[in-house]
View 1 (tube, rainbow, N blue to C red):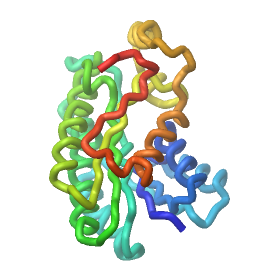
View 2: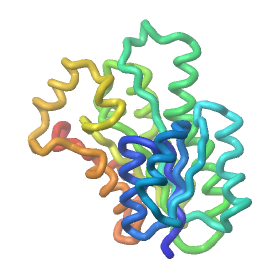
View 3: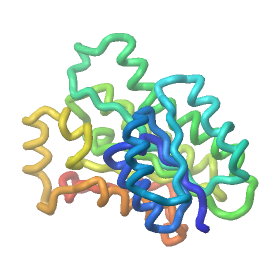
View 4: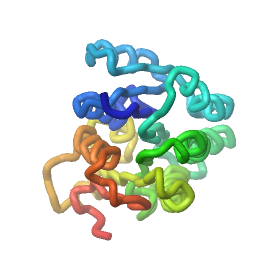
Amino acid sequence: MKDKIVITGAANGIGRATAKACLEAGFYVIAADKDRNGLQSLLAESDTQQLEIIEADFSDISTLKSFIPQLYYRHESLGGLVNNAGLYRGQSVFDYSDEQIDEMCTVNLKSLVYLSREFAQREMSAGGSRSIVNITSVAGEVGSFDALYGATKAGVIGLTKANAWNFAPSIRVNAVSPALVRNTSIFDRIPEHRRREYERQEILKDPIQPSAVADVIVFLLGEKSRHMTGQVIAVDNGAYPR
């Protein structure tokens, strides 16, 4: 059996596709999300003993502090962490309430701080190689109509690079930066004019699906990416050449 991989936001979209791709690659998958029905349907579809589901709300600070430690009561070690849980509201900064600002910052950025730190504290001295993959967005690099989303995703990029230094050499930390990904909850909330702008700038015309992003995540979790850390990998159909 390959390493055990923890995936947050695993009930839908990119997280769900990543869970399936990891199972196909032979990993044991611990899939976490607050969407109970989504997790149950993932379990039913997968029909394997290699999948464990956990209902967890990553907007709750107490969950962030306890989630990884509780896993170690059942698992001696973990091989990888995919920080995928995220929020996108698609609204102007002027429309955000104080509570919504706090929730966005907690789910999109604070959760990565807590989960990555708890994971690294336990695995840095374990021997072997581990991998953390953070899901950011092109919005973290070029901005977003949803200013809080863009700001938090920019923070993910900074955290990825800092933690690559902090956790080396035993834990690699990389980020995946998708652009317009179809069949996700975020896609439906993107204002129409922004969707048209993304599509106009894409120089590859095959629409990006969650499974395509999952392929890159699985690559970063595995040994074939063993010389990569601190990197931000775009999955954007060439819309934003770096």
